Length: 375
Image 1: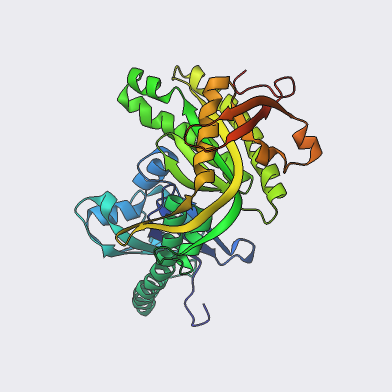
Image 2: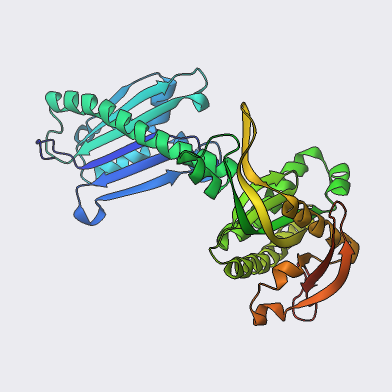
């Protein structure tokens, strides 16, 4: 604008590798009240994103292998695109779109590209020199956005696959094998009840959605209370609550447990209404010293926690089936809770856990105070 280009509206978009979004988009408008916004765009192969993509001029540019498209809107050149009709009705006089492929493919879903479109409301539209400038500058803008997107992509992927805190640590340089620290933390281990039996009874195409549904509610509850999911082990979830004060971490874990029960009840009701199989989750909570960091071989590292306390948390969760409780915690965990939280727990006894060299006192939520999930 400062250089004299009479821009009315601008839109740029770049494909991204993300488990929830297909592209990242930026919108600009000469109207100062609606000047700028950015959005994550849904996948174009499903839902509302598909309908929007099928009507987009960009899709047809990809199919026809076109790099530019100009439509003089004031002359009625909209080619029956509803989006261009709307722009013309809103007073835009000229439209110029660009597709720059960073990675080409005969399969459209595998193309990695940058997209841009520019409009003006000036009478007569863009001049030829302005079109040349927009084409040249858009490619440079695409490269700049790609560089920023690559950094964002790296953060998204490591956090999605390794966890939020491990992802941040790895990107900050914690990548050396054996580089670990000893921490005292709250450990969460949840697992699905009856998974083995369910996996033998239900159709294979129902198994992955079942796992995804229950992993989603567990992870949402953990993240919502400030926890970090470190590992998905089949139908199990290993997480920590890295609060500075252990007592605060224990309270956060209990908050996540309460949220988990609500989410499971909602999920079970939703799946039953659709005639889908349901399951439940059981949970073990513990606190102890663990080693936290890079463990593995030079070719394959994992950023996780190891130590006897991790094994103990797993065994505590497994005991839920034996005592028919949805949640069990160790006395070490319970002793760190404030009095009002501790009063919600009752003892289920003292147990010799498999693989643990000492007996452990276990507690659960008082059934008179807390209804189990799905009840």
